[in-house]
Image (cartoon, rainbow, N blue to C red):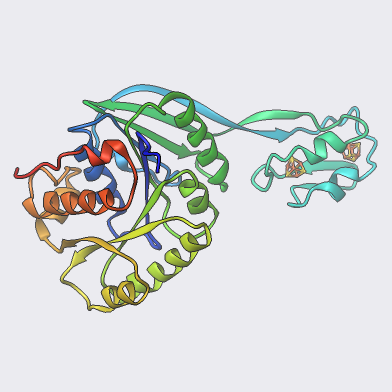
Length: 303
Ligand code: SF4
Ligand code: SF4
């Protein structure tokens, strides 16, 4: 089997508040102590990795999507555009053609099929991407504009940016949006492995099951991290055993983690239990993923 040099790991969860950001930021900082690492915050509706990775801002870039703009002077009101838009983003109201940019998927159909060329496509700002540098770690954070509803186009743009400019990073971590809908599918699409973060509660189990189902449909290799281990019950562990899903590690419930987190601090270099969990994740991944850099990675012991 050919061994890849770099490794793309997506960190996802069926629901918010399970510890996805905690794991993403600490694992990224931990890995960057040995190899060049990129952390990409794809939770574009409320990115927050930069609260914990306090790097220097390198640049901010506006991100646009293409939206049709109605040219009244050319329009013959033939109605073709409204028929051709599958997303009901173009509507004819009397002698007026309205484009609802929030619904538009930038497919170009209305623009290409308009016989009068009255719907040229124009760029429209949907969000921005910030790049930060923090020692050996780079952070890319994409943020949707307030009121923007579609996360997927910005996630795709961010993947493209990563491919074009950061593909030489050894470890690439993608902090995904919570849930199991289109944004998560877009965020995990390039990943070699998906870590699902959950907590040992009935809510955690319910949403983990949905996330597992989604990742299996996408044929993604998965492993589970149980955060706040020690609260709740054993149902998550029993489910993983039944479904033959590896538990990569259990991060014990610890008020000190919550205390550091609330101050925007990384915890792996303060709490032995968290560093131990990160080591366990890496040891587990070494057995699962044919990645040269991972095999050569010596886990850091002690604080
Ligand atoms: S397809 Fe073009 S010409 Fe026809 S109604 Fe739409 S904008 Fe006007
Ligand atoms: S570009 Fe596509 S989605 Fe957007 S308004 Fe035109 S047909 Fe609809």
